[in-house]
Image (tube, rainbow, N blue to C red):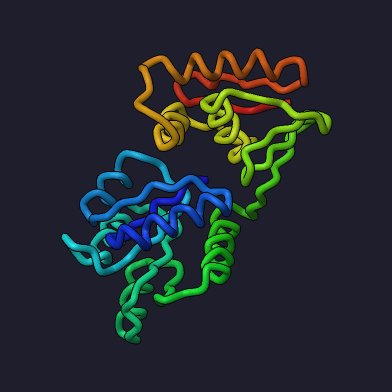
Length: 220
């Protein structure tokens, strides 16, 4: 799962990024509102953690533009503004939760996971599919209890498909997820990774079906 962290304090932002990684999430750090808006328009995230005191704009403007696009992406405001009017304003604009700095990391982790459970219909770091089991926190895969190793980008494709198991996942969605992990992808990269992954999974009774013009679907 990928989280966009919007925080202009680089020390706090880097520290939070490390904590989120330890909790099993991939993180993009945005230090300005403009960067955050650009990132949200070009990449698919599972959640936003949003500071309000940004150097170029009020963080509420980021939230306003996100909700104007009819996005239901979970947003947790994490800010030093503790006034009642600030809390009400943030929630009325569409934030799903509001947390005051300073904060306890354990509480932040709990709130993040609660929001993700609600938005994804239940969230668990361990996902099983047929004979396959994936531990998202440690990025480890087993088949029938035995380790199953994949190159990083093929792992990213598999994770994207497993998180939406039973649904068609678009090529763009997979590409955006991989772009957070690594450098820019070649035009045909997704087809190549899907082809390689499909061949690796076939012996275990798992297939990646191509839904032409739509994306890919994981099937037993």
